[in-house]
Image (tube, rainbow, N blue to C red; front, top):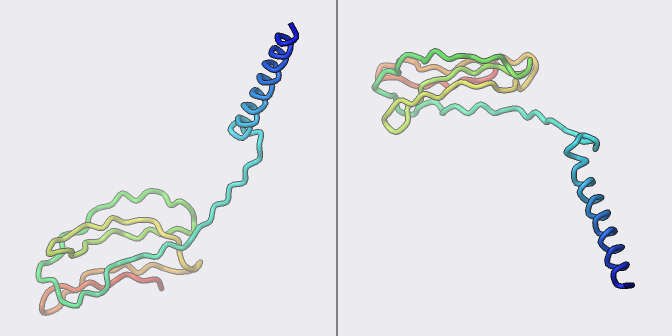
Length: 127
């Protein structure tokens, strides 16, 4: 009879401890616990191909018309897409929003420039 009382008491204690652990695990998910979220914006480096050493003999295709979504913040600037010459073929590199490196920085887009032997890429840059 004594063993039965101990096992019932142990079972009750076990259930209480289990319920407390489950409740403690659910508290953060319920919003009761305070969570601190920190958003760190790092400047995005715009990587464009360097100026071509050798001109491309084939003219770049017409630029794509891109659907420009609203900016994620006032510090973001749209950098338009462009055609890149890769492995003897034209590849479209889509535009994207990037964070300005300075409050008044202006993006000067890259472009393909016609030269006597073909086309050369003039990379975009911040001014």
